[in-house]
Length: 305
Ligand SMILES: C[S@@+](CC[C@H](N)C(=O)[O-])C[C@H]1O[C@@H](n2cnc3c(N)ncnc32)[C@H](O)[C@@H]1O
Image 1: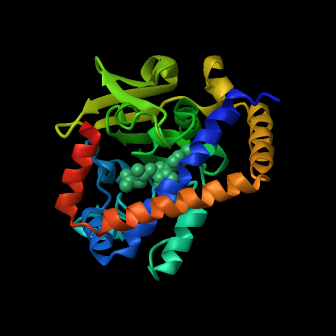
Image 2: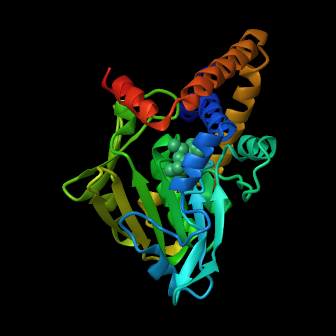
């Protein structure tokens, strides 16, 4: 039996999980990589986002709530607000589809950090309601349906809320469409575009008056987009409804689930999956062991190859 396009794409996405888990497992394993990451993150400090004054935006809100979606385990965003020179704890949630794996890693390495909550961009409005700010950094281009993710995130915001995106340009092209990397994020003539070999979407045009999109290419090359929801959820334009159709979602999710079960009844496939994870874990164990500067040099060489 032929599977639907969503099932085929999701299957590819599922195959990217072992690489991602092996990466974080080894960042947390080695004290120097863990400390390097926490030194770079804003955990314990005021919220800090490149190209957007999130602190100022959130101070205007009576009950600000922030969701860092596709958070990984980097705690990058900052978990406080700064008001009159004082730090105030912020209601911030770390959301990732690999939450089960990540919480196991936190426990394994005895880290006292907030647990990661389960959620996916593709179904975000089922997990989050009335958010002031949703941040997605280096993660939208890892999802299997980024346009759906944007529309879902807008519905998970309160009216006037902001979806903040920060991505490296054209990661899928750089990574040769391997693993999680199936879509590119870029800026073209001041517009946010999401594309791959078969489709290209101009986000501002798609969203129309439902949301405003401000896009910046930062000096370091990062593509930052500040997407502000203008309309009520009930005023979602007809052309965007297909992205958030619950019936279609249910049908697709059933198929993905049962197809996954079907594929995993094979002993050979299970074995292949375990070997894959073991191999990635070994590669990451050695890669994360290296000093940071050497690791960056090797990464640059691999990307140029
Ligand atoms: C490169 S990491 C980025 C982590 C963090 N945002 C940062 O910038 O340090 C990508 C993260 O996106 C997550 N991810 C992949 N697909 C996703 C999806 N469909 N929805 C939300 N997050 C996803 C992965 O599990 C992973 O933790």
